[in-house]
Length: 475
Image (cartoon, rainbow, N blue to C red; front, side, top):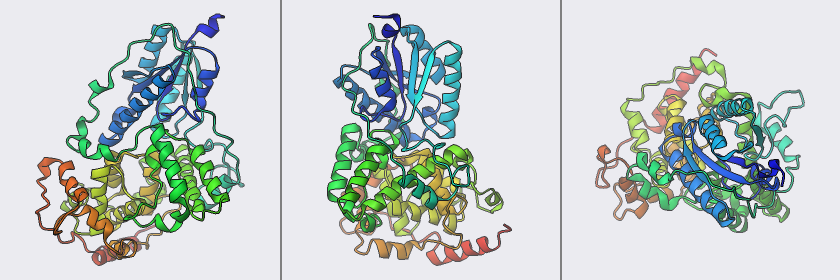
């Protein structure tokens, strides 16, 4: 055995909690060298909101259990990424560190610092693709540069072959001695969730096996009707794979190829499913090329738009608490508190209501979602909010103001969605509607016996105010 073959590789996992179709882990495994998987609760993860940070920890723990089944383990550490990795290199004698690439600004800044620091120390660094179908710099518009419009981007992606998924890693060579690991239970990541953690946890679908099961169930039973049923929040019409994709518990390529197989089998909804995967790709394409999208108006002219940024306003508090008096909005916000998830159609409605009816800056909503969603994704969250507000790429035109009342009538005609999540005034509230009051902070003082509120801003009044503001804009 040569010295190089005995030198361990540190596999730094961040949002790629899977054994299958994992280029970085596959590279490490095929090297023949000892592999030490490590998860670091680092400076980027520490800035996550309450639910995303907790869910990230759950994903890491599930991945640790999967690694044990192939004769390995996951080393848990906490601290600044470069400091932790340097310490592990010293402790283990590792000669290389590898990871799967991420593309949001915070992750890129961290990874570039880690790469520069480790290379300066003489440590080999290898980054690999895997979080998206294609690297953001691989997709180029015909005119040169990156795409700014979704439709031609989707056509470009649809005409490319992502290749076959890599086979699952079946074994990892262990090191001669394992470094010490923290116990993630000591991190108490559920703490900021307070009593909500116990309510949300049964609704989560954690781990690679759970993700694979979710994809199989969707492609077998629901993808055929996806195009029409996906807009109805009261039915199980979507894949719910966003939670697993954001944590890398399943690869985008695996989902894409499953959609392509369904399309070839004549399942009509598969094309719409592929469009949604392409939309996720577009979000990362833009986050990489125009990183300001995660925190600033993508269309800079919107910097002059007079959104209200006073988050202390009572109508904003009503929005965050699901007490606006608009049933579609309130049902959606309560779904998020109970499950950590919100239906896609509902996300558009609550975002439109906040930014247009309430004239509140989209960053208020973006940050609230970033604290409450188990499937929070920095690219998708930013893209969705800016699309609804009108300040982003391919945005909804300013004059398109979703009417949350008529939308509920159209997409929840039998009241199943609103009835599932709103308890006030119901003779026999559902268990999910009651669970909302167990999930929210006690200091809010909410009770299912409260009267349901009158609208803080009616659909018609909000629309008129929004259109007046948009028509008066100076750009």
